[in-house]
Image (cartoon, rainbow, N blue to C red; front, side):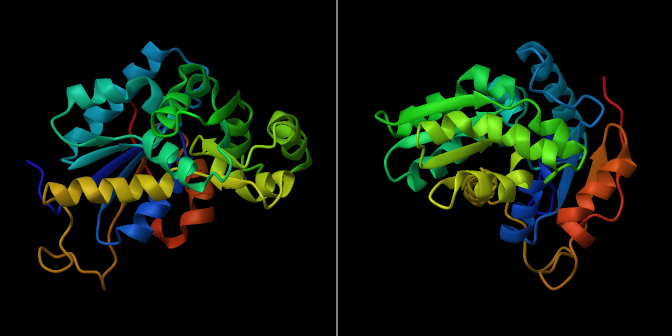
Length: 275
């Protein structure tokens, strides 16, 4: 049974969800995290909705076996295709990244001209368009799939000439449409944020869902009296909180890239094979 000291489970198709982990560590420093990166089967974007749902259920059952108190679906494609299924399957809070990201985008937009970039699966699902329209029915939304970004990030090619050329091509319609806000509809994409900001200019707000997702998770846990204690039960704000990182393949590659933006928070990576 979940208790306030139980960990939060977070999963993604690969390493991109570590951008969400970073925000959780910042906003919820007393929480323990178990992160699962499905590096054996990345990317999820080109895969069918049924396959993404199957992968997500397998990961959900693994995290449930680790006695997590909530599951955060850091992958936008898995959120788009599998969130309702996961919420029906598990008797604990399951939180996705699309709705929090949509709220943040609408709040940031000055003229209601929004762009969304994501994997083929996320863009094909129309999930962001629906979520944005529910909040701002008059918003104009331009969506485009950027399938090459995930493998580029997974390879660590964050600011190379090939990445720059590909990004320029992907962003051309956004620049032509003069969007004032761009939703980074994949957790891998924030790692490209400096490059995207340079290409789009300072007038365009870049939105990733990590901040809002962490805040939403805190609200849900607070409402259920499941926030981690700051004292007692062995967990204190002034002591290091032990997180676990699990990959389905290539743990050394995961560790090398993960340390770039989590630093000492990630000391080792376990391997668990699913499917």
